[in-house]
Image 1 (cartoon, rainbow, N blue to C red):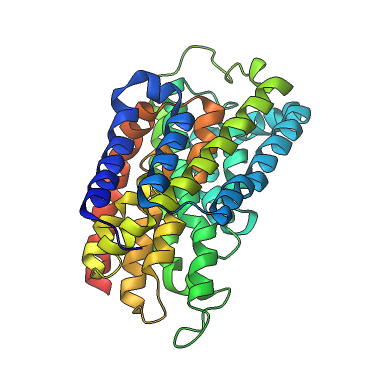
Image 2: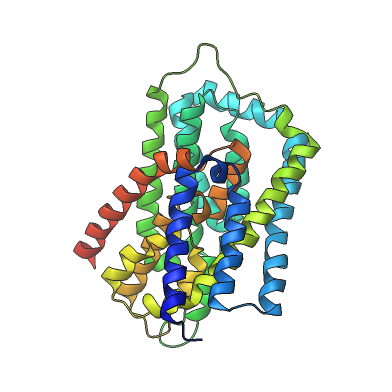
Length: 350
């Protein structure tokens, strides 16, 4: 459907509100899931995209992720002592510096095989067991989520972004198969994950409280808290489904035919808009390898800048109680630095 000028203006305003209000209004920051859900309903209403298919999708798509969060919460509650001993042994044997390096590096690489959701759940559990103060723990979560978001794109298993790209490019002239994205993005992702892991090693230099071991999360492991956290994740994912479909006509009209350079920077919208939605709009069979690399690189980096940008961000923020301002404070500099660095690298080598 062709959007009117009024609809375009309202959707533009909605994007600005989604970007700004969680950072400037404490009540919204405290109830981010409900705020995004309302924004999703508003977006679909403005763009007139309501359908039974969308309602069904919004209700069913979050189920798998929610079940994974709930079941993992119960499992980690049961085996918490064993995981804590393993984490403490690693810190004792190889030190905190190498432990956080391996966490960020291995979860980033393995996320394409174990899925971004499982990698994020492991990260959220292990992060609270490390001898870190809250500020350091938030930094670790942010860096590791950037790493997971980058690594998960390499296969059709890791996250929906990879699935959509491979599906849309499976025919001529690309004939994309399971290893297609590894061949195109492997060296870029490996370099990024390694860089993020190196940045994480600087956490050891931060000030730690004397005798601090692991965060006190006993109350956080109650069955009630696991239910509540799973419910928040369900609402969050539902909100992103609605927001993505509601803004899809806007994206189709404004960004679908731009050059690789323009798409690279405009795709920072992935910080608040599901990157799979943007990929579904922008990736077509006639896309060049150069444009595809630019497009996907910007999507996987910018998705880490704000909590709604990636499922791992949502899971870790919910589990660790990280607010929007905290996330952006730690993620924005990293994200902009990576965007600039990769933009330069891509121009040199492509």
